[in-house]
Picture 1 (spheres, one colour):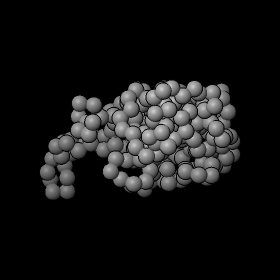
Picture 2: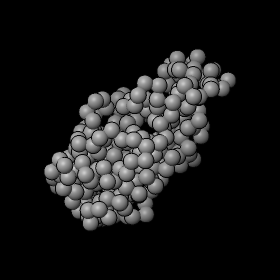
Picture 3: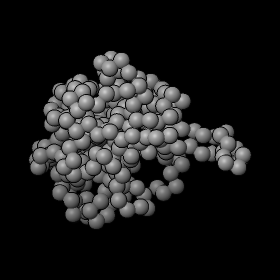
Picture 4: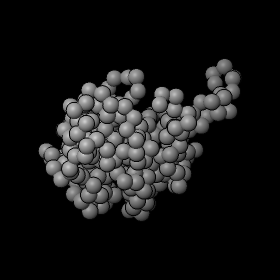
Length: 253
């Protein structure tokens, strides 16, 4: 298998109400990039937030008593802390310069996934309200425009437990299963796999992140091409939920 990562770098700054699917296709065309059957398009969540108008002006927030307390413990701005609280279902752990929480979507991550990068000073972007629905709308429109069968992954940059550094992870998906259950497959020595499952959506998001970058690269969309399990995992009704570990199996809280 030969996999290609193709950054679409002619995408203009996104504004509220913009049709991302049309913008992506037009930008690809202007860069002489053809969207093919079985392409997987990974889209940065900041682009989604901008198009859906969920960017928040932190100055508009009034810190609660809890926000003020957590601000002192973490050293974070109290208005940002209030935004984190607003976007969280549960605050899990607090320490110097970090707040680990469970978002309303069920993701456990730092700062409820709120991002202050690639937006103007004083603004912040939350995780989209319904990333799967956002991905679904974009996939359907791109397939209508191009006549090609594609999948969409919405990615975010997050840290990992017990490891330094951040990687791209999938927070929304459409068109392909996010988790590949390989139970029953045979390994190199003829043994049947008993429990192996592969977080393919996270693997693809992380691969795309190499091209997207985290600073001023200006590449919010990456095509992942040549994934040979596309047909096997094709599903137009899937969600990101299979990647979220049930709380009863979480041994660390």
